[in-house]
Image 1 (cartoon, helix red, strand yellow):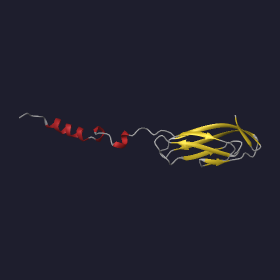
Image 2 (cartoon, one colour; image 1 turned 90 degrees about the horizontal axis):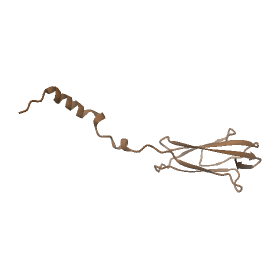
Image 3 (cartoon, helix red, strand yellow; image 1 turned 90 degrees about the vertical axis):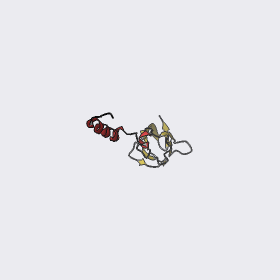
Image 4 (cartoon, helix red, strand yellow; image 1 turned 180 degrees about the vertical axis):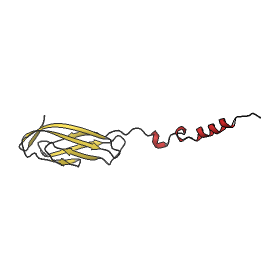
Length: 121
């Protein structure tokens, strides 16, 4: 019969029961959340006030949130937004798309408004 000091047996039991040394939980093995892929379309000659966000999430998240800032104090929160500028000038349109886990993508588009016409710069 071999003799193992009681301190070694007790210390080994504590180490084996420590959660930090246990196998990682299944959710800990998940990959890092990736931000949505986003592009902006619009406006066009046929729809001079329509802006459309084309977005998809690499993890398949369908609960995407949209935030448009048209650079003149007007905002919208849908994938497809309508906006006409009240004054001619240069503006920066910012679209931010969030997935349900908080990852986000920001797209900036410089535009020039002249009356009802808007053109990318």
